[in-house]
Length: 139
Image 1 (cartoon, one colour):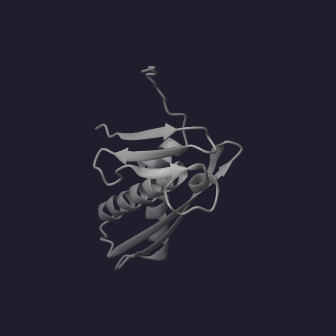
Image 2 (cartoon, helix red, strand yellow):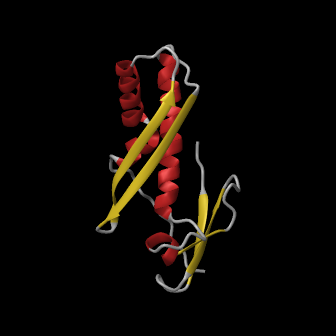
Image 3 (cartoon, rainbow, N blue to C red):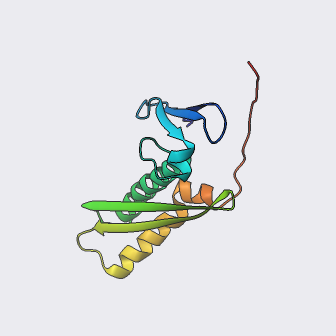
């Protein structure tokens, strides 16, 4: 499986503007700027917010699979992900999970949630050295 997104940027790092589009077009020329990334502006997105969305979504889906394997079906899983950025890198991803799972004990739920945290693909990517490749061409 391979998925893609396209980001464009015009101008300087601080005064420039960019847009992000995804393969599915769920994001289509969504704006991002220095202010939406490092300031208080709310009129666009930023890379860390998108990583938070990816981690929350990936974890929720993985937890559903883990619960099913353990014989449970969640009625509702809500995951908030808070990404921390420090010293030029993502320093922390914190997941806050609230779920309604009929018939499960608190201990079993905690065990399943820990399994999902460790094994969801985004968690694995954030916790390991992944290969980053690139093609760079001037046009």
